[in-house]
Image (tube, rainbow, N blue to C red; front, side):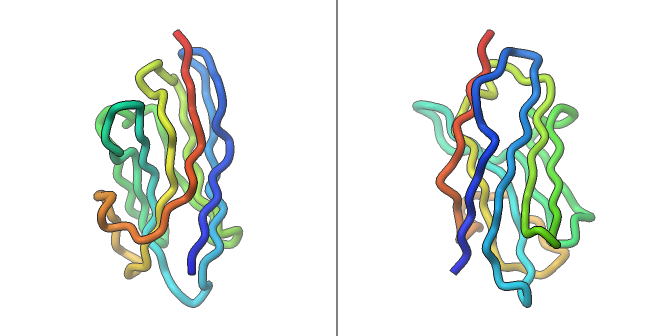
Length: 126
């Protein structure tokens, strides 16, 4: 069983920065694709960023590319999302997700992930 716990959300003014963390309890003998998704009120959950196990392959949603950076520390079993130049439209609950996969695999679709955290609220004021 994989457990994911997000932290680092909060209230920030437009143009500010936040760093989200996702602590994962995973089997060290397995490899996992991981990603970040978000869901704003009244909207569907949407892809934000994803990374393969080794970290060499990353993907971003067009709306965040150039502003957000995904990274991971496998020694600490932690996934990060550095969010810069935040905009009010970035306001959402942000979720960490994991899926057991070959080391080179990146997953971009929510339905491809088996494990989810509880989410952390990010609110950007104008």
